[in-house]
Length: 182
Image (cartoon, rainbow, N blue to C red; front, side, top):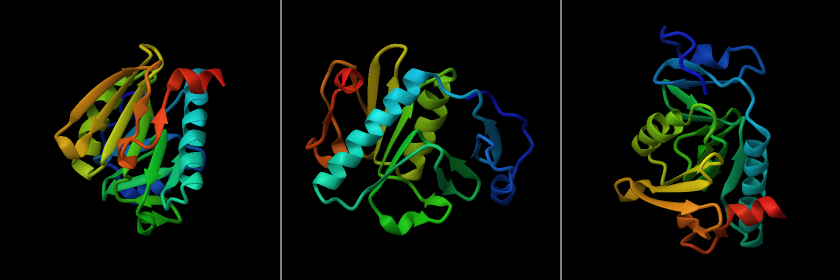
């Protein structure tokens, strides 16, 4: 994600009035452009993770919903983000526009502006009540797992490692290398 398009504060109403197809996020009232489109590896990882998590939820008759970007997540009155993957287990947070409140689990796939995922969004998600946050980095082939209910506890994995999804108490294990080779 590139730097802020402009530093003028924008309201949530102005954000929702942006032309259809605009790829942007509103963070603390500042609009951030999300172009250009992500690389193919980003999309491959996103699709495989989405499928794996949705399949687990369905197989276990879970109540969580799994969404891929673009999907608006309104974290507060001046912040709407579009995480690569959002898992929402409290269906009362779902609205016609997306999710209103913190998802239980968010995955961001690092791209050209990884600093945004590692700093700005990490802090934002922690403040907002996200329970688990993953940063999947195709460049380094690492997965950083932040357990935000545990004071930013972080665990780092390689793509070849089995990574437990903590909101499911480790019953769901994801290996990025295996996902990409299927």
